[in-house]
Length: 352
Ligand SMILES: [Zn+2]
Image 1: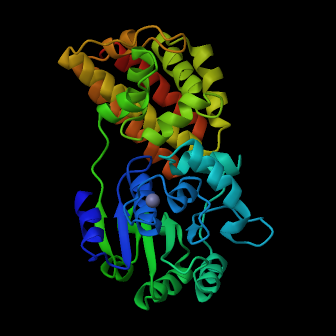
Image 2 (image 1 turned 180 degrees about the vertical axis):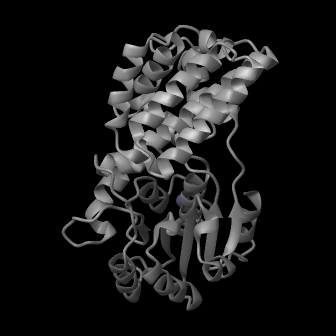
Image 3 (image 1 turned 135 degrees about the horizontal axis):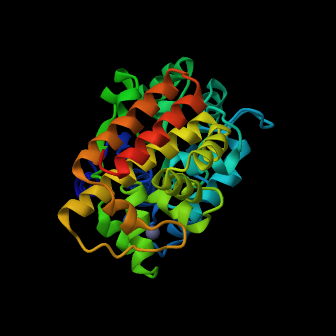
């Protein structure tokens, strides 16, 4: 990322920049830092000038945001959710798509950037910059732009306006139109490692840090949401499911399967994906024999669980959770596949 800021310092910054990397990782904070650099009075993101202060509060009049949202607002544009977006991003600078979705809807709705929002942007950009300096347009998750709107965005990128910079922050670069990608300067962010988690949760107990990193790494944004509000994340549900599979009592498995099957499908997929991630990392810690600080956290006994995963069991866990995800994609009966997976986990925990 140093090169990105060097390009800016050398006045070689392209007017359209594509910053990409994992969800809940560096891309969004880097995009905001670039915005601050472009709007700062001394062009350094000094953090102390009036412009930097306003960027920090996400309130600079020449910093425009576009992001995916759900339909049903008053204007049908991102403006309907701007307040929520500011609130979410101020609370969690590594905001990830899941946390954002839960902030604005409890339903299983697809988040999108509709044509109307791109028209809204064109409209805003046709006015002159409020402060007469640079103007920045930050588009989070351009991969969620409706196909019909993508061409309008392409036009915005192809015909640069004076002193106007477009920052695309993407978590799925391969979903973008190749014509859009080819017209932007690409900047890739490295995945976050455990030290970023340790740094962020510096003041939390070691076992909490380790659990958050095991379940969520490298998605720091999801970990921040889970830490701030365990209610809306699925950590308890995940723990309960793993505990039940570990015990393997059929009537308890049936009950937990019923609860899981009632979740929106996307939430269920996220939960399974995280379980897979957690168990694989648990196995890794087990094999490496690294000191496992996380023991009994009240919600889940990490050591016991990860210690239960032996090599043969680890491959069956990966296989059964992977099959479960595939089944859900193919709309196989949810309770059937969850029941099957739960018993497969039970047997995998015993090394079979
Ligand atoms: Zn400044």
